[in-house]
Length: 193
Image (tube, helix red, strand yellow):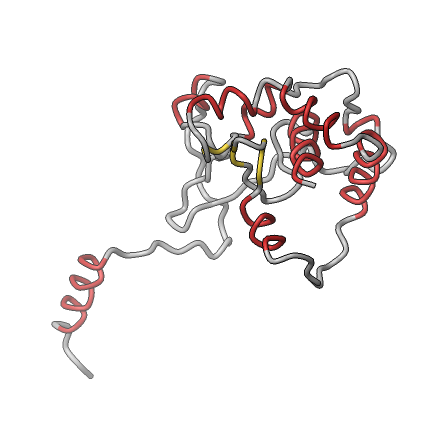
């Protein structure tokens, strides 16, 4: 099961510009990639868990992955993972290290059996649109990619000048403890009516 989950994550990351299909972290172990949360759930044997149905595009993708890899036996799946260029290099550095999504992206970068999202019938319409987010201080939030440093992101493209927050968004400035103390002290000195 860990091989199937890992392959699902790897292919999805490669086909969707680094976006994960599930909030999972795979660790390089001697037996292959292991997701520690799933490992803990199954450690005591079978279990019953209630969950919401995944969104339709995710369900379609999982069905596609099952079609690609569901008929393979454990040895065949193991062979795919051993040759993928992501698990083994991380394991050589040390057991229980995270296999980063960036490495999965490079290792599975649109492989021969990858089907790009825009060629799927259930493709999301808004996936490529950039959304704007604003911090509590009124600065435009920069996109953050887990496992990629800010300097590496900056090297990928020129940094834009910070934009101002749109008016009427309700963004307020959060005061530090010192500023709040000064503000309280100043208001206490005002004459009372």
